[in-house]
Image: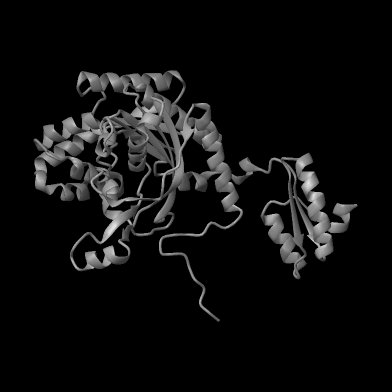
Length: 396
């Protein structure tokens, strides 16, 4: 017997009924976003490698799945006359969005509110619950420079999580400009703070001692002072414009009844953030459920004006693990009709077509009877069928 073919390492198959649950979770999240006025877009899985590399995507740029040149161009590249790879699988949805906005700048309303749910790929080491292919669920605002963008993104994200049965979440908030000022105050002038951010972003994973080791080139005293600041800093310790923006976001969210707190240790590893950054925490889990921030000017890389941009991304895989499937019960009847032969099947298909028009919320699934009746009944029950009936009954 031939050996079974498994999914590529770090990838996975989605088996029913999980696929249906994921569809319903995505639809409910998108329904919330639609009520806020976010418009759905799609972008290709593959981008030119130049779009992905040099995008200040932090360590994720090192994890791009690259696609080799094809045909004669590959032969030339192997001979040393060009680059081996010209395409790559996207590692997030933010960089492709900036490219999308630049390409369609004259067609889009401004400000532009966009929703984007799609898979992304990172060539990292697979771990339990962590895959190389996973879905992100993003909303972004393009063309809004004020704190209204941050406030609405946070509200919409928390509302979406509540809609899928995950209440009790809170927003943790910081600002990259505040963090940049702290880095330069304690470590001196830093031409590119991205490596510092990447190291600091690992604090909750590897601890202060390991982070200090990674930052040892900046001097032990300065690193120790910076790590201490991350634990004790106050929101008012920054430029007036930064403090005013943080106070506006915090005040608006609290007035609307959304839990929010300033978190000076919040870093986020992406290099492209330019202002406020945020994550969503839940008391029952030790990881964030969503994250994002302001990344003004990214569109300039692709020939468009340097537009203000701000986004929030829900970790779709993480929330699906927390969702109670009972929340997404079938909207109507779910009927399986078992037939003994082709004549019964054809008659039942005709009858089912009429019933689907009469009961749009119901499911009518016409099937040939399996040899193992017990297994077939069990499988259908597992898939949520509440009625399993014989063809003769269905046609009566």
